[in-house]
Length: 93
Image 1 (tube, rainbow, N blue to C red):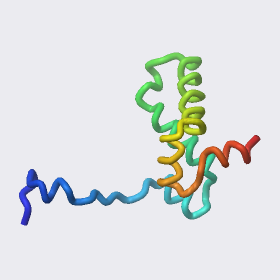
Image 2 (image 1 turned 120 degrees about the vertical axis):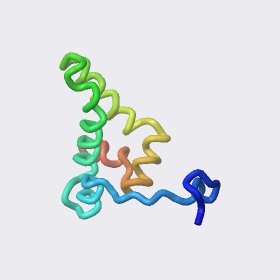
Image 3 (image 1 turned 60 degrees about the vertical axis):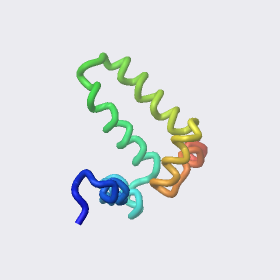
Image 4 (image 1 turned 180 degrees about the vertical axis):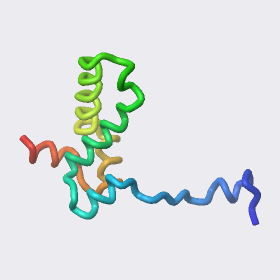
């Protein structure tokens, strides 16, 4: 058996259970837009209460815009969810 610091252990893939939000998205209980909103709000948890509401809203809007426009983030969202945030944004306009 490989020791905790052995190279074989380091190369073993990490398996994780999907988040509750991702499970709800995959089961059709929530839309991609709702999923991204929930994940964005989770990302803001560490700054909530430390910045004023206007700054928090600016960060929120910036994060969501990045999810719709940054090619790396678009690909990451597509790989994780199977949906494109670009298409979701176009559908909600």
